[in-house]
Amino acid sequence: MRSIRTFAYAAVLALSIFAIPTPAAAEDARGSFTLSHEVHLRKIVLRPGDYIFTVKSMGPSEFLVLRGLNGGTDAMLLATDVESVKPNAANKLVLVSRDGQSFVSAMELPEFDMSLRFAVPPESTPTERASK
Image (cartoon, rainbow, N blue to C red; front, side, top):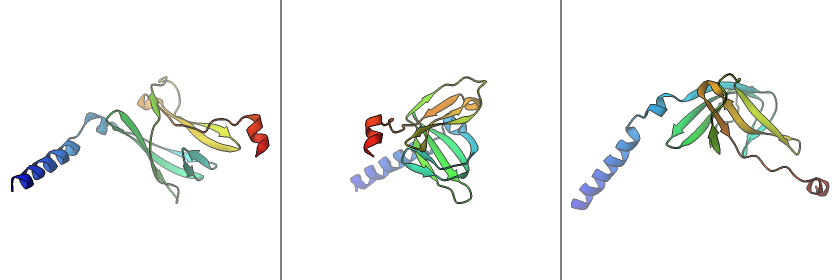
């Protein structure tokens, strides 16, 4: 009987930790963007179209939550790194090209004083390209 009570107490304590509102949760970054062509975000392929996003702070980590409108892809990704950006810059997705494909390397959001960085594949060497 005592072990059930101990377990119940531990479960209530654990659930209450998640229920406590945090100041960061109230300041989630939100916005939208449109892709004109297929873009890779880590291992996720984003089709052309409209997307809305939310950046959620969960402890020391920042998660990018994407919702594709018009049948696009839905995803949740952990940012590799988060940096501050110049406040006068414009919001933008930074794309890099690798072997004819576009990859998101950063999402710069100066209005929220953050730039989310994402891992991209390394550039292939001329020898690797010739062997393909």
